[in-house]
Image (cartoon, rainbow, N blue to C red; front, side, top):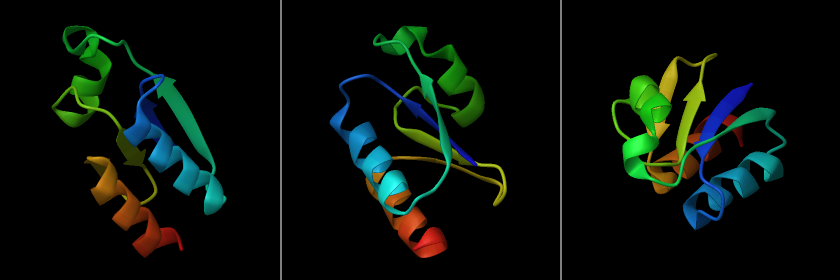
Length: 78
């Protein structure tokens, strides 16, 4: 199972979620605060406060930036 840190209304997050669902990948959503300064949990796991962030424990991967995440999902799970 993957974990996605996401923000409500974030189009980049929704692109990643759409791909996860298309590829039928089980995932857990962690909803984050709208203010960057309040995204301490995202910073703790990824070193930055930008979303989306995907954590793939099985592969040992933590990744940010939606385009990179989409490429990763297609490479590993498609």
